[in-house]
Amino acid sequence: MTIDLVLFLGLALISVAAAIAMIASRNAVYSALFLVLNFLTVATLYLLLNAAFIAVVQITIYAGAIMVLFLFVIMLLGTERESIDGGIRWQMPAAIVLGLGLAGELAFILLRNDSAHKPLADLSAEFGSPASIGRVLFSEYLVPFEVTSVLLLVAMIGAIVITRMHRREDR
Amino acid sequence: MNIPPAYVLTLSGILFALGVIGVLIRRNAIVIFMSIELMLNSANLALIASARMLGPAQEALRGHVFVFFVIAVAAAEVAVGLALIVAIFRSKESIDVDEVSSLRG
Image 1 (cartoon, rainbow over the protein chains, first blue to last red):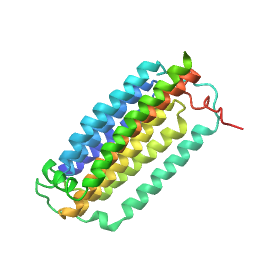
Image 2 (image 1 turned 180 degrees about the vertical axis):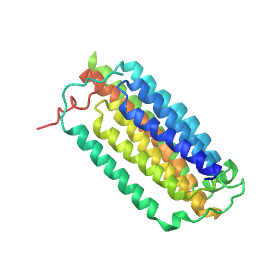
Image 3 (image 1 turned 30 degrees about the vertical axis):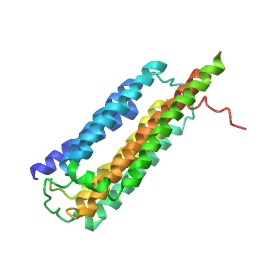
Image 4 (image 1 turned 90 degrees about the horizontal axis):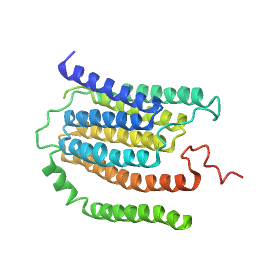
């Protein structure tokens, strides 16, 4: 067992445990914090996979901005606790069985894939650096990049409109 | 790192399935939304692992660019989705998805 494999298995264990804790904890604030832990371990995996730029983007946007927004809304609404009563009785066991079935099939198919078992070629530090991604992003993908800015603007306006309309109705 | 990319792809598959389970068993709309984020994140992990597998070809960087766009779309989605959840809370005083059934015939 190489050091790489030990490192990967440790990270995989932490990320899966954090994901399970996220869906199992009753308090939504704990769920959000476990999701942050999961995002951080995945960012570390990105670093190990020669994706330095994406790892930093993951930490700043996902673990930083998006999860702060989540925590903000949870605390604004004060709905961190979930009622246990009600709901369909067989929903949880059925969901767990079907979900584990999906996980098993995905693992079986992906592990059987021969081309994914070949040893990896050594990459230079240049691969996945901000400079190399920027070159691709601003030449080949310039138009989609600009469209993304429009998308973010539309999302911003949409969020403002959706939350303001209801305030007017309340008056 | 020199481990078979199949392991990383398998990890992303397991995380995706956990996100599916979270969407199916939870009734708090915010936690369901976080499970969707988990699924998006596992798809990103699969893209990065595939890019690593196809390296050092310069075309493999397209996987990284795609992940960048997915993160941007996820940010937009979170802004609109959380605004919708806040709007639902204002009219229903609850974000339990079982209570949001006004459209049921």
